Amino acid sequence: MALREISKVIIESNKIGITFHTSPDGDAIGSTLGLLNGLREMGKDAYIISREVIPNNLSFLPLGCEIDGTIKAPIYGTDLVIVLDCGNVDRICADLDQYDGTIINIDHHVTNEKYGKYNYIDNKAAATAELIYILLKELNFVFNEEAESVEEIGNCIYTGLVTDTGSFRHSNVTKRTHSIAGELISCGVKNSKVHNSLFDNRPLSKVKLMGQSLSNVELLCDGKVAYIEISMKTLEELNLSHVDTSDIISIALSIENVEVAVVAKEAEDGVKASLRSKNKVNVSHIAESLGGGGHIKAAGLKITGSSLEQAKVKIINSIEKEIC
Image (cartoon, rainbow, N blue to C red; front, side, top):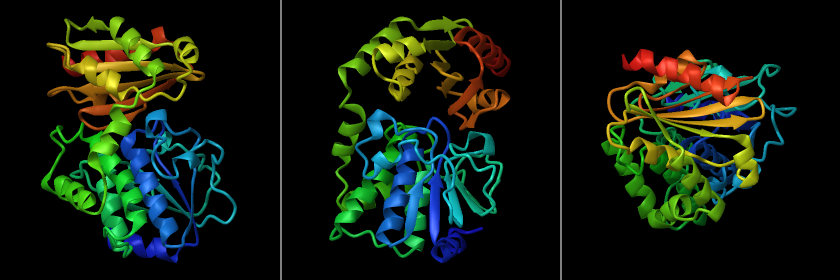
């Protein structure tokens, strides 16, 4: 289904819930808040559904405080749920088992399972945020520099673009990506301000976590894999239970001869892991083999009921199969 048809479904809906994938990143959050702010501006009754809270480094985004983990399932009267940036049902950060209304699935992952009643999957998009920008235009939202709300919505979308492209350096960047970024800047988005909020505003505790994590990095698989473990005890001591680790994994991936970087983070119910690839290794295959998903060069997974040690064995075994 085209975004034009999806926009008609949204216009005809009354109460709209928006959700995303578990362990949400900048694209998931940026896309969601961009759409939420846009729908609110249009007078729509829209709200967030999430089992998790917003990562600290993304809390500067408008309406980010509403991603607080309090609404975990669609509330009464919801006739439409929009799931953003999520490739499969198991990774949806909401309880939808009892929901019998309409689901729209908008994503850019090539592995998307098309689980919605209406699906729009564009794997050529660098970020789902690109698609939200286009969708808002289909909804007749006008991006112009005279409207104060445009900068707020633009900040959300720009954040999705920046984070999912590695600040526009990854190979997923296209002419359209730069065009949208340019249009957002022309409408009032301060690109340097967004970048500073994302990357140059770390609390001391986060810097300490980065130092501790990188000092304990392990090189495995003949130096091709950089592996980092972060215990729940460490996160609790630093009061960083909702920390984003994308900057840590990026540094690990930059190590000479490393092809894959992994950050495995202990949680109450298991282990969450992020994977990044430098060249040819497809980390989405690795994540999918363990119940996760993502992109060729960036993916995530969760192993429920596992210790860090047990998760490490499974993850490394899966990586070895992909590398070999």
